[in-house]
Length: 451
Image (cartoon, rainbow, N blue to C red; front, side, top):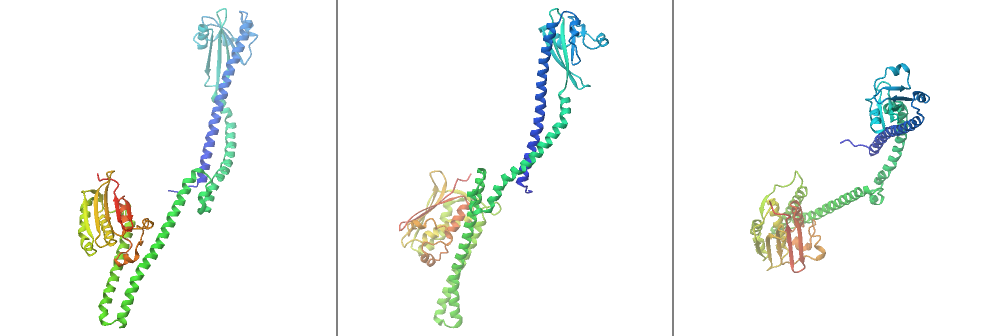
């Protein structure tokens, strides 16, 4: 779409509105003036007819005294014969019977009558006013006047000149007003840090708020990227330093023969930790880009109870090594989702519940529907719990409540961040309830049941 100048668009519309207003005003003025002229013409004919009636002496001579070029006087008998016409005598002899004329018929029936007839050739219209006399005859007065179109044609040059003058003034005013209107909006871009303080118009407040919100999100994302880069560098540097140190000791012969196997085991352990970290980073990166139109994972019905049972089967050996009891409880509940991602979500939650538990502890996976009828998956443990001040941060990347315990158990600090992204993709919400020394309950609630 081609970008248009706001100033030009507003000016163009003002020009158009001004031109339309001028043309409309001219047309209305002509109509109003013609109407006023028509009413004035009727009043003048009524007055003149009243004078003629008062001076009429039952003969045509009394009428000829009032005849003049601007007014046409006609005396008509009850049978429609023209008794007197103020025009030439020759024309009077040739005049037809007037009984069919509308104003004459109205005068004979109601005492007064009037009518307007146009002349297509001369561009004039004639106003006729007729009144019934006491002797039974009808006195008719006629007066010629220009039609509205004739008036329009005569006034057209003046109208065009006025339109051009008004339009020219309108163009200048439109440019000045548009520049004054647009200038404050252009000035908003000069100081984006305080754009909300410099909003010139109320209608632009949502626009300024959106810009500030977008800037805040961008700054937050940039800060997160910087922190993520720093955390990744730190997490990779520690095992690489350890691997490099052990490898160097073996290479230089400083390691005793009986320690080589132990060093190899430590190198393998640190390498495995790096592989898990890289895999989690790749998984998290993939989840960050998922959920859009083209990258969303394939969705299908998934039974949460079956998913939880399979998860406990996979982690049963880990639970035994940690002396933790693993149980599943609840009804069969179906949701629409990605089986692989939901398996990853369940396994990360369950693995955390085992990892941050105590010998003799227990972990319960529960499925069902809440009071609103929404399906949920709950992972509950009676482990070490999470402090209140740390609960808002546990789903952040590389955040660890107990760093020493996490590293000792092989955690990467990305498990709950992956859980958060998977829940986002499925439109689910996460609820965390934990007390230090009492245990933790994490509930994943899906918005609606599958149709």
